[in-house]
Length: 102
Length: 355
Image (cartoon, rainbow over all chains, first blue to last red; front, side, top):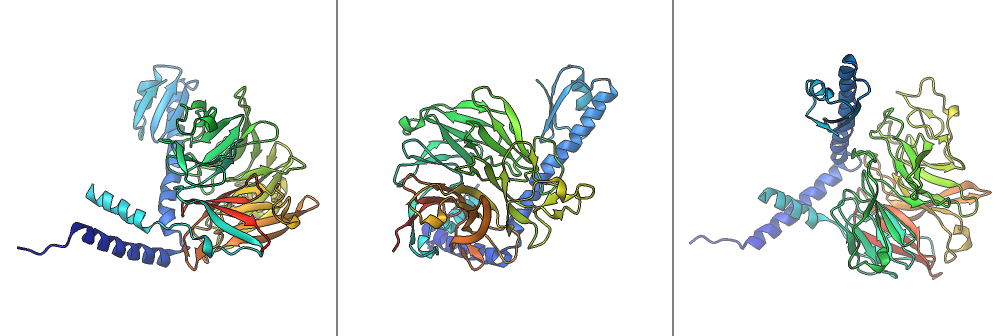
């Protein structure tokens, strides 16, 4: 019969070892911002991507004389208000994930 | 799923608790734990009966009974409910894109009411998306909306401090050119708004400074993204927009210290030298070497202008490891200073004993 360590002992050992590892990593990267920079980059990217997409959507609508349609873009989903014809036009814009009418 | 649970256990197991014995204060002051288990403790507000409300960075808002003790959740399932404010018996809570109102909250702490949605169209982006709330002496609810980026020229409803008439729901922009303010208060005598602002990143370890600003009236522009610290043109946006166009800071704070909550000391417990001074919670730098902030500083005024900028409480940073990070300060009814810490998950009480 194999000797097995109790599960709690295994978890405790892993936790202690993991804490050392986390602590070591934090000390090595202190002040560099390595942990924070990546999520901040992607958060900022969401805003920039949406604004670029909004510009494309507005241009596509304006080209069809629908510049009066209200446009809201958030995380690549577009919400429109003002003219049902706009839905099909916006669906064809590259990068749009979904289109909703309000 | 097992890996996720293990990672969660690992992070939870590595979380640090409060260590008030490591905090250094001026002679005569003492620090203690006011409430020791307040996860992600952020913005602070006091109720009329002395309940301390604590906003959070994840889902919950907590209430700490008068005099301190165990925190109890009074709202849950929210999106980053950082901001809290109290007026006429109601608790106002700011999520990223909404402001909620919990009526008669101190009478119903054990069974909080369903909130009324006051505002539902604040920007939804996570970047600088934690909203601070406070009622001004004009009765308006002030809400900064930070820039959705490190440095950019966003639409005009970003990088501003707005104010809202909660009776009519009318809103207006009070100040512009504010990158990300997470703390503000009104001078007890002049009633002018003062606020902290976090300087941009990636211009070096020593620039630009965080700012302490004074807004004696509506309509001022404080420089972002064109000018930083009153005299540093932005390399990308500064051309053609000289710093002289903008309102300079009342005081330059440390670069990247992340100056967040601030309050005028309007109590009487502290010695006379601190009365009317501004206490600032510096959350601490995330990409500066050496690390800076992680402390409470005090700006003393002379003739209504900053005269000094000094350390008041420090010790949250131990070498290159921060075991705690101050977020907000508030003056308790007895004149003690309460401090929130979102890393250690605690509220501290700093009192003057003269010993």
